[in-house]
Amino acid sequence: MPLRELQQAFVDGVLNDEPARIGAMIRGNGIAPERRLAIYRNNTTEGFLKTLEATFPVLVRLAGADWFRQTGRDYMRQHPSRSGNIHYIGAHFAAFLDALLAGSDYGYFADVARLEWAYQEVLVAADHAGLDLATLAQVPPDDYATLTFRPHPAMRLVASRFPLLAIWKSNQPGVDAAATIRLDAGGSNVLVIRRDDHVELRELCDAQFAVLSGFARGEDFETASGHVLQLGDDVDLGAALLRLVQLGTLAEFSLTSGAAAVTHSTAHS
Image (cartoon, rainbow, N blue to C red):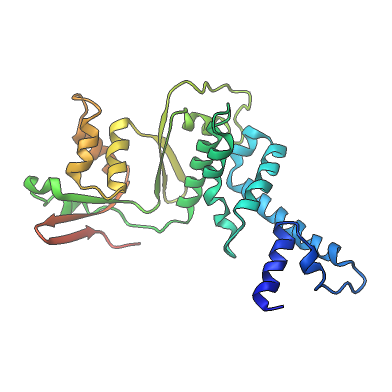
């Protein structure tokens, strides 16, 4: 059997519970081939599930360990680890839950998973010293429309029609598990950003979320501002942008003039 076929047979035996093909290639030597393979299968499954549980602790608390483990097994069959670094196995979990729970009373589980995965992403994201405010202040007002901001790499945005941040906070260690959250209490725009010694989660108003989402999509200031202005005439765009700067959500900016573009930021730390 060619090496690639042998490896695929081993994967099928471990992940897909199809031991027949690889079993014929395993020497028993006192332990049945099926039992030898079961050791790998058990270790692989338990390692995967424990990592998933550590990645999504709020979801475990909400759904219960039994449901989470069974769902985790189903998820592993569709999305086995593709890397030696198992930190990334949760990347597709929110989308998996979207499909699994669509139309049910537990559809909000997917948004909880989306928030918890954003938390994990910012933990390992690149660092950055932040926006060069002195250089930004030198930009002429006539050029504001062509400003393009790049969000901080250790920042993520999560929007939900559910009170997502309240759900997350009420399911932290030490918080009364009996606390009731009304799922129809309104939506949530959550900023997840890494600070020097912790990860911060906070609500953003619609204007702040809209303009920052536009920047995250690579839109210039004029285009991103258009989304904000659609929210209503009473929206203070300047205040929204100032707050985003104060929160450290922006890393650098580019100023496009004609065919030229110049990027400004402080040095990476």
